[in-house]
Length: 197
Image (cartoon, rainbow, N blue to C red; front, side, top):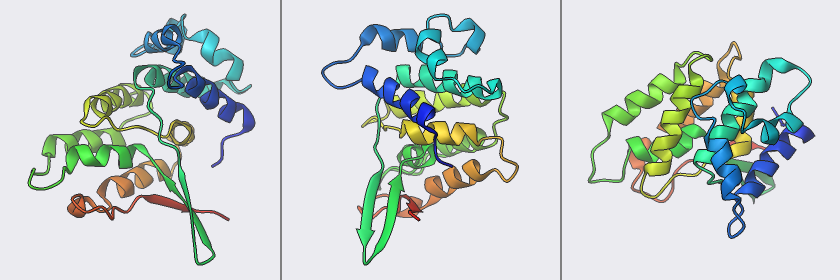
């Protein structure tokens, strides 16, 4: 799924608020104030979200959730585009990929069962509980050493598809989380890759 122009503009606007050297600390604080709240309780967040909302209101909550999470951890990882022997692909940084180093640190550190359990709980989250699980996940990403960024465009795409009956987002995150987990010490990790058409 590709984001439409309005959705891309929304994430682009959020990124502009955290542009290095020109951070709008007041705006980021406003966005953070929405953590753990429902959209109706996010009075300080409305001005950053409402101009970008789609006409169908059933997806509004995902925009609010993304905005509040971004205000809390405004670190972005851009996709990396590759081409080799005529084949093109995009390296995408999903939540699963970002969370992997927390559960599977480089040797000699052991695998962290509690982090894997948190990730599995995130994958199993009902849409009504997803905001809380993501808040805890982003908090862990922010506090890790080094802090793990997110691709905020990809996260919006994933949130908008969370309810898909085939659970495609959850499968992609699981693949990105477990791919190469046994070889985290090597520099040849296998990121999520999407072929360009």
